[in-house]
Length: 291
Image (cartoon, rainbow, N blue to C red):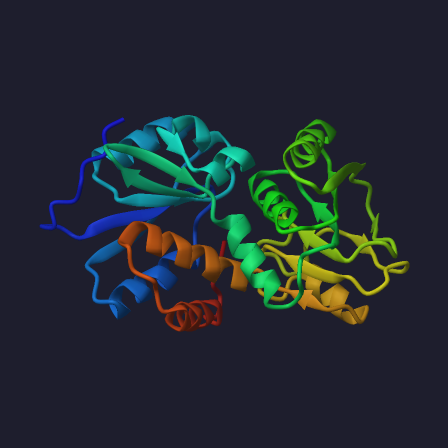
């Protein structure tokens, strides 16, 4: 697939594909950062149904996009439309950031790195015993990066046992962390041996009353993290906080992975303070439906 280089006569185009993408805060966050750095770039959010993924990726090449982000439900399926994968994306088996390179598409995964950077500001991942909810693209990225950073064990809780087992085998085969699978049966009990709980599903996205149902009655003080960006304080995090547990929202992960994509596309290290301010401003707008 041929991806033409920008001529410099028109704004450089990047964007987001997913379903749904309405209200996704990445666009406003990166547009503000492009403006701050004096770059004539534009970020376009595009709603792409799963059955239209292939022509959409080809269309972005034809339009001369410099790259694009990928969100649910395309992170795994888009791998088959890449010309090359980074080592991380190949290991994870999912792509969330695509870069135009050498006339083709390079698939990268910055989700896990973004999450890890956010986590490391709170706790050292080495030796952590993790309960991970989900086995999709985001969960794969988080699991792999946690394992590579020294997590002791990762228990994967998912409705699709086969998908969970594939991820568990990947962790066991390619990292030093141990792995296990548990079926999703609400409420999900969090035992005393768990140090970190991560919701890596979309449960709670755009709905403050939705989220995974967990039982913290036997927990021994784990950190509870959510990859959902909006609302920043999800039902899961509210319930964990009410149980006296520490929490970590998904906005730090979004800023960190967005900064990595910005640098991969432009070659410039972005001002993360600008990114955080733009994200906070967008998230505070009344009536916004963020993704």
